[in-house]
Amino acid sequence: MSTLGANPARKVILDCDPGHDDAIAILLAAGCSEIELVGITTVAGNQTLDRTTLNAQRVCTVAGITAVPICAGCDRPLVRPLVTAGHIHGSSGLDGPDLAAPQVPVSEEHAVDFIVRTVMESEGDITLVPVGPLTNLAVALRRQPRIAERVAEVVLMGGSAGRGNHTPAAEFNIFVDPEAAAAVFGAGWPVTMVGLDLTRQAGATAEVRRRVRDLGHPVGQMVADMLEFLGAACQREQGVADPPLHDPCAVARVARPGLVEVVDAHVAVELRGELTAGMTVTDFRGRAGPPSSKVALHLDRQGFWDFLVETLARFPR
Image (cartoon, rainbow, N blue to C red; front, side, top):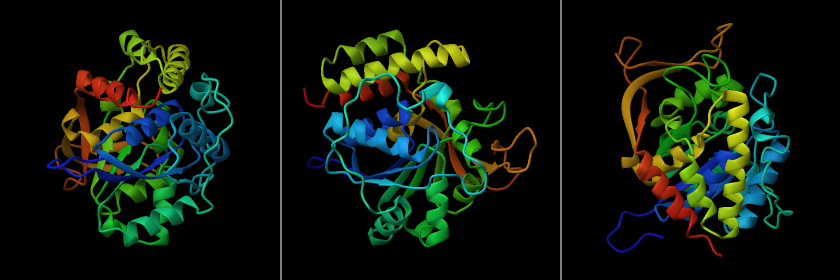
């Protein structure tokens, strides 16, 4: 909640595909005072929709997040077969922690309908924070194009101004549904791309993992177990010792913009390249067109980790 004299909390819909870093993004968005989390929408990506939705329920159950609706969304990309990331997140999408059956229900409202309704009923103050494939947002734009005029901002985790992670050219979220990404980047609303250039700076070091485990409550234990599993997977699959927490970086940009430095650029999504499908072609020099997005390039690492750990510490013991 905001305090007297402080800036009001920003209203956020978190669109996600949990996933370990998505799960931590949920906790950060729900636990920090700078954000009013008005909804969690799920999409197929890191795992199938049934699993990503179940994981959102499981995380919210452990954390006691009971007043935020969870709405399941699209179960496949717009035109391509679904690609998942079981090699990183495991067969459940959230392997590692031992989580009980969820007690938090899923809304009967489809995620796309929830996004459209919430945005259109708002005063133009909803920020969309998609941290998975962008299918739900693209379908919402098709359903009601006027949401592009009413959304305050889209702050997405995805893309890269340089190399990818799923392919040499493409970051995973954009690769899974590049047609949806092209629609989102081209909708004319304010977009901030929090991509790999920034999120690779958010590696969870051994010190960070110790700070999380030392919190000594169920949420801290759950996150510590997530980081242990994710660290082993990233070391095995990518040769990375400190697993990057991609998705919480997008939440941090909304909650505390000073933690994430951005620059203006023109961003377009490659759809047809044989080797480059899903690449976010980023032009900082203005040759491809006027700036269409803000692109995140530098992270205040210490500030980010302090923000995350301090927020996790607020969950009940």
